[in-house]
Every structure is written in C-alpha cells, then in structure tokens.
Length: 377
Image 1: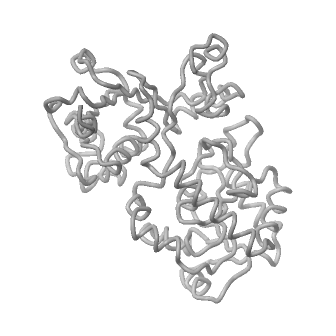
Image 2: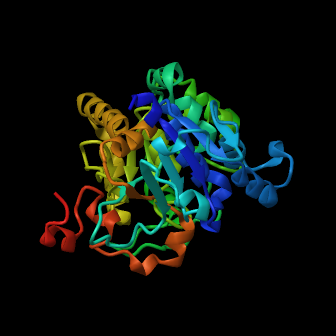
C-alpha cells in the first residue's frame, strides 16, 4: 500500500459536546491532519449542524467554527471517497453505516481526561493556540514572532470577567485568575507598571526595555485580536493564570510557541508536564506567586535565554499540531481513544480529577491494571 493511500481522514461527529466551545473542538481535530499533509474529508452533516447552531451565514459564525470550515484543503463531502477505508475514520459516536466499514484505523474523540483508562493507552490531543492565531504560528510568521525584540520583562493581558471561581482542587486548589491579578496589584509595589490606555501600551512597547511587570487594563488598553501575538512576543515572560473553568488557557500555548516563557500554576495539565526553571516558572499560592515574579524580574540573561530555548523546544516537540498526528502514526491500534480538553467536561466533573486520572499520570503512563496484566508493552 502506498503511503499516500493511508493519508486520508474521514470525519463525522454526532455528539453535542463535540460542537461546544463555538466549534473549537472541530478545528482542533481537523487542523493537525491538514498541516501534516493529509487529505481531510469532513461529512457535510457537520457543516449542517453548525448552521443549525449559528445560522446560515458562515461569515456570522463564531471564529472557531468559521475558521474550521475554511481551513485550506478541507473537503466537505456527502460520503466517503473511494478507498477512504484505507485511511482513518474519526468520530465521537460511530455512525451506523460508517462504523460497519473496515477502516484501517478509527479514532474515537472523548473528553474524559479525568478517567483512569486502566486498560488502554489513549492519546491526548494537545491544547493549542486559539484558532484565530493558528496561522501566526506557522512558517515565516512564527519565525518572525520568535525574533521580535523583547521590550517587556513580564506581561499580563487578557480577560478578567467571569474568572473568579476555583474549580480545580487536585493536586492543590488553584488560584483563580481574579485571585492572581488581585495579588499582583496589591503586592508588587513599584515593580508593577499599569498600561491603562492603548497609548500607555504603545509607549511601553516602543521603550528600550521595561524591567517590570506590565499589566494591561482590559477596559482601556485591550489588545485587539490581530495584534495579540505581536504584543506577547515583545515580552520575556507571560503570566498565564487559569481559564474560566479549567486551568488550561490558550495564552500559555501561544506564549511557548513564540518563545515567551510562561509563568503558570498548572504545569501538570500538559503532557509531558512542564518543569519549573527548565521551560517555565511555576507558582503555587499568593506568596509564591510574588516570589516567582521577582525571580523572573531578576533572572540573568543567560538563564532567561536557556528557559526561552527550552520553551520553544517543548512546543516544537509536544504542542505543535503536527506532533499529535505523529503520535497517531506510530500506533497500530485499530481503535484509539483521543482525549480532548473540554470546559464542559471539567465543569461537570471537577471532583473526579485524582492522581489516577490519565491527565495526572500522563498519556505515556500505562493504566495500572493493564500494566499488571501485561496488556501493554
């Protein structure tokens, strides 16, 4: 069989959860295979379902859904093309007709990251940059962002509204985004620089170098979508507090992609987990947060360069979308579970997360019973 015959994917989704988050899950599944050179065929019922949710005008759809349907090379089809079974079938729940075919490999999309998966070894689909920024982290654009001159030592910009509740309790309770930023404002003193207006931010970005924590006011100096990547690429460090429900937030991935070192409280939510003072800075409680910000502010150029290089290397090896496809290609399972990050699933099951969850063990750790029974080697 020729390699090109294998590089075809047929995708059909039936479950409501896959359509949540404005189509982000759909974008996240399609984009890696297209970037990896696969022929990707999407069942037209997916587009129809999105139209039922968001209206007939694709131009008015939320960006993730709109961008998913306009991905370069995507084919929207009524049925599988000839010889599609020689490739991959991706689903959340098997379609009766499609499931009866003899596919070379089936990928089942699931969202239960907190389950133990004792008898199997699922693949974690890496959380990635927001779909609005996906084209900025490829090719010459990514190279240019990584090479922009850095003007700010530590930066935070982003939404605050709704980021108050502490959902996650394991392995420790996480500070909410409101907790994090309130602590910074209250305790950083003269090492804090507020950008209250767009003019303030422009002045700071045009400066020689600001060795402070720059906090962008989201009301007066909100960073537009089309400038987001350029702004965070001007900082050496970016503070990455948790998202609204789950700790994972696009800004951590975006920072690492362009060589901005993340300061985070959830290193274990990424597989393999991030390492303090190797590819990130990790903080815990309020006191530790302030201590780690001072660590970033006072860090030597040599150490900062090492962390930056390691952050980029980590992204290239583990978070770049094509790395997901590479993990699939080395597995010979006829049915493989693919796990995705989902705010809805986290909100439903926050107490389910524990040390045996596949998210905490890491996707390379075999389930306990499977290991004891010798079911996985």
